[in-house]
Image 1 (cartoon, rainbow, N blue to C red):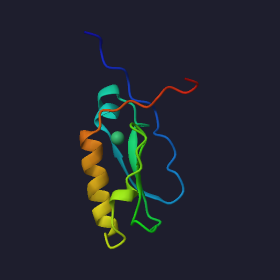
Image 2: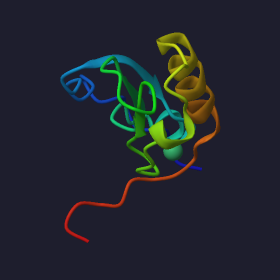
Image 3: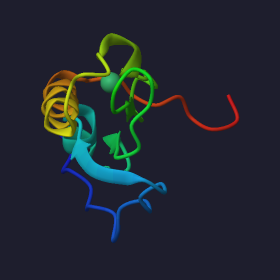
Image 4: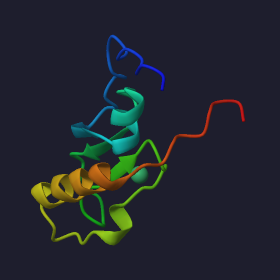
Length: 92
Ligand SMILES: [Zn+2]
């Protein structure tokens, strides 16, 4: 069994408007801080959107405009704890 690789020195920059970021299970397993779920603090018509950089899903559509930012954070956290998806390598 191979040894885990070292963590990257710094995680990717937070996109503008991002207020919370959660490392996914895949990111933890691969020691890759760039595989995250990012929560936007900019409220849209379906509430506060969050975006998974692992499975590339955007989850604002399942939220209601009446949901709070805390709800978006909670759901993003739950997604990050369960998501094992790997991002598609660039250029493929
Ligand atoms: Zn995901």
